[in-house]
Length: 414
Image (cartoon, rainbow, N blue to C red; front, side, top):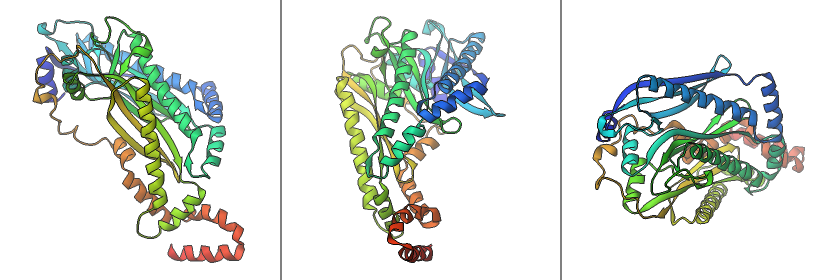
């Protein structure tokens, strides 16, 4: 725990304790592996894998919390949930920093939170009482059937609706499970939500959403249904600042669009990539994907009755040659009475970045760095002979002589 975190927690009557850890090593098993393989062929959620990962993560978190309670701690901050491979098995690791309450904090129920000490200060001051670290996950695969159908669609330029539907369904399913877990804990909000996409074995991915199940007295006097749980990925200081302006989170909004450059467009871009200058097909494709994604996000926020979307982020990643995914995510907010923070001014220690936290997350850098992806694509076109394969499929109609002539010129450039 940093000095800033310790100072902020001290203002709320807490002091740092020991680092606490919990883990669980699991195996999918032979029958589970066969079942997961069969589900991979069909596409969608791989329920066996989802269940295994969820059970492993929860077991590790519970053991971490028990370790903190044995030390007499009142809570755990900066909780993380990791997945690692160990001798062919899967290890789930959870860790955080235990905190002890002073007499001024008034004790209270044991809690665990994904928030740092600085963010926890902001949450407490803005009226959010932390309850438990919560999560929702989905293990999924595109599947052979969906993959073939989507592959045929990628021959034409534009959105690949089969892929878009799968990604949208998976993301909202994970969010639904996060809200359901929070509701079971008696929470009416989940703050500091983080979304991660992690590989899990051949052909499977895990979408993981984590956050802190909390309760705010202005949202409800007691427990609520899962569909009434509010979610937000805004930082602690953002929630505090919005509360000063009379704005409260309504729901985390997400939209995904998968777009294909198309076979003909891909060939044209491949040849243009051999020379210096703008790639108009790729420029237009990415612009269209962004516009569609933002429009879907706006429509979802309107369904929630929100006034606006705060902290909107656009993430772009390459799914394959000529195939990109654009994801838009933000927090829908609405004006509300009775959410003024306790303090008139936010202390500077709550917003000072620690030296190590100022470093960008490698995954975020990789997903958002479109320029780097475009450069890699261009280099791949220049340096890899297999980049010519799509062109040769079409050029086959020109006859052997024509193909050999063009192929010779390509190899000459290479």
